[in-house]
Length: 46
Length: 152
Image (cartoon, rainbow over all chains, first blue to last red; front, side, top):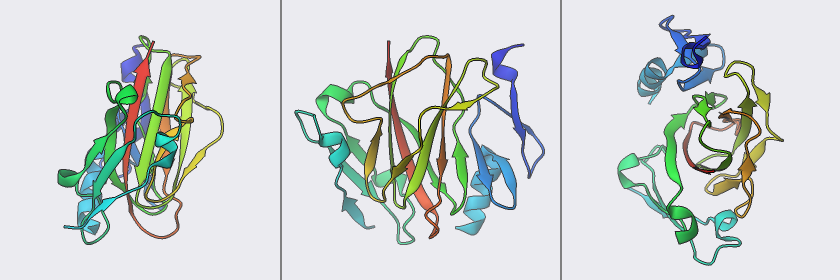
């Protein structure tokens, strides 16, 4: 298996696969998010 | 825009030259990337590079993308934040199964913390590296900024 396609998690917001080679964010009561969804969430809360 | 000049004793220790870190934050206490300047000692400046810059929600966790260290076997990590947080380096041999590397380091608010110590280096026994940052300050969202230096 190619190291670069290993899936780390499924984004709790958009459902996209988050690969090991991508940053991810875990929000309590929400789950693990991809970078795009996390930044959108933070902008909404900011 | 408020600008703070913060102490960085853990990086100054053991270095022949001092370190200056200027960190800008907005009125809400979150980072303002336009005003962040960091200067490491000459012995480190050539190798340290900014790795992550973001705001981390209270109770939230940031999990860095895995770093393929095929061409590296030494790593230094430095992390700064506006609120206390915990950093846990992790290793993997297959980019799938991850193991904690040593114990987690608590980084106090307002400091750049060098992991391990400023004159030490993490020696990589496996190929993949990443780190987990948890904002368990129990207070508020924090900005985080991390730096990595790696070499053979």
